[in-house]
Every structure is written in structure tokens, then in C-alpha cells.
Length: 398
Image (cartoon, rainbow, N blue to C red; front, side, top):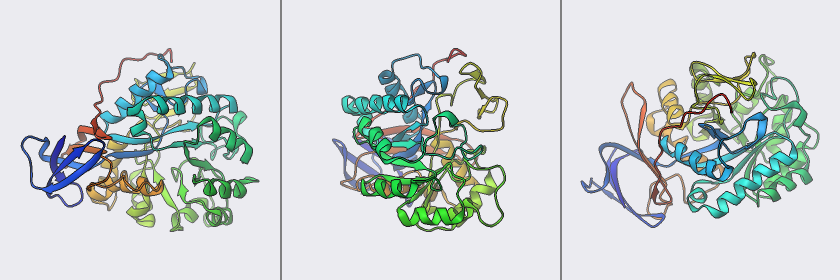
């Protein structure tokens, strides 16, 4: 397979030759027989470090009162197809707070699917465990159910990691909780990225977490209080820390344009990873779901019914990249790097995030007008084209 178009790095026309699952060569100039064209951008495959579900399909089958219409393994394949339709080649399925038994069951399902489905295995770069070691406080807890929030517990984490067959690569936790620093040290020693999130910590607790080995801030600016201290703030401390990479949901609901602009200026593009945090209800029609617990609003954002609290995101990385480009000081190449190079660096993946000979053939081809949405031309995962298609019509019965 060959693809041709403009390099996202410098705009030069290139042709990328793919053999098997790797990039064999990158040459200057176009190729009229290759996939793409002179107006098509070629980027490394978009890489989402936090995605829970999309379009009625869920990595958290049975959680939070939401039921899928298909078996989880089939749903995972459909979910991967939908993500690819938005340019996402690589992703971390995210398992959220629930009963320990339910979380373990979901981790086992993902691990089994990855082991048996080669296409899924090509796209999954690890599991993101978001919970249950989160703040129990209203606001920082977000939409995570209080009854299932737990204190940091190394044996419990290991039980969940065993259920995942070692696939957990990111663990988000609140560093102010008793036992958090010991768990962070355990995670780092095991090669798991320790991420700060859903926290009400003071600045010292953030600094202590970084000293213990935390390197990531999960969806900074979200999973927090509606009002924070003017000085001793977990947001300021994380933004100021050069040892932390920050993940951002640049959808206009989780953070607004001015917030995105300030956060990018504080962290600089090389320490920003764009994520979707998309959930099962993303992409579905407006209405109430899960027996009325969640509501998809007319503009697409998702809330806990009757509250202002967001319950996950609805936009995917194609939208977030465009927003980051238009709302901040970043150029298009930098915004794309925040969804390609930076996630690969967060997970220490040596053969991903760049277009070069010997790297994995994970590519996203797209067009974009100055004032229009991104149009995905093709998503290539492990050397194979993976096409998305329209979402099926799902009803209130979810």
C-alpha cells in the first residue's frame, strides 16, 4: 500500500510506502496511484489516551445502568470502526469507577478481545484505569458513583491489573488520599503511567505525587470543584509543573476557548495530549438514557440529568484537534502532534507517533478547510485501512 499527500510536519508532498504493519519508506513527491492526493494531509494515526465508548458501544459494558444492544466483543469491533471514522487509529480503552467485580469483568472482556482480535490489538495501546481511587468529594468526583469510590490500594490495583492481563498502562488517581503515594510508586515501578485526576489536592500533595513519579494530569480543568482557592490550587500547580503532561478535552464544554489558550501557553504544546473522554452516549440523539440518569443535550454534550455536571464527552479527536488549532496559539502541525507524538511519548512507544521508515504504519489522512470541519479520508491501523461508517439509530432503551 502507498499513500500520498502533504506531510503534517512541513507541508511537503510525500509518498509513504507500507509493507506489512510498518512504514517501509517515505519519499519526496506525489504518486498518482497511491491513496490520498495533493490536498490531503498525512499525519501519524490519531491516538486517544482516554475513550470510554461511542455511539452506543461501550468498553464499560453494564456500568452505570447503561446496556449495549450487542455482545461486548462485537461492540468493541464496532466501536473501533466508529473511532477510525473520526481518524483515531490508536486508543486506550478506559474503564471507569464501578463495583470491583464489574470493573474486573470489563477489564477481562477487553483483554480477551485484544488477545483474539488482531485488528483491535493493533489499535489498543493499553487500558486507562480511571477509578476507583478518586476523590469522594462532590465536584472532584465528577460523575463517578460515590458508592464505588475506593481508597488507593495496591492489592486491589493488582487484582484489576491481573484481570486486565497486564494491559493497564495508565491509572488516574487522587494523590491526596491515604496510600496514594505508595500506589504511585508501585505503578511507576510496574511501568504504568501514574496520572493525577479527579482530585481536590492542595499544591503540596500535587508536588508530592510528582516526586513519587506521577507524570500525567488527567483532563485538567475537569473533575474539580466549581470554585477553587485563588493560590493553593491543584490546577495552578499542575499547569506550572514541567514534569507533568496535561491531557485536555478541547470540546468547548469541558474547557472553553480561553481556558484552552491559557493552558496551552502554560504547558506548551510538547506537554499537551488531546483526548476525547468520549462515552457510550456520544453521537446519540438528544434525550434521557439509563432510566433517566443521563441526558444528551441538544448541542450534544452529556450531563447527569438535572445537574450541571458533565458525564463524559461527546466530541472525538478530529473535533478536538480542530478546536485546539483555532482556539490556541498552536498551528495545525502542533495541534496534530498533541494527538499523535505526545501520546506516544506519554506511553513510551518507540515506533509510534511519527511518519518514518521502520515506524508502525498507523496513519490518518484528512482534509480541512480554514473554516470547516475535518474530513477524514482514511485511517490506517497497523498497515490496514480501517473505515468507519454511520452510527445506527439507537433509542431510549439504552
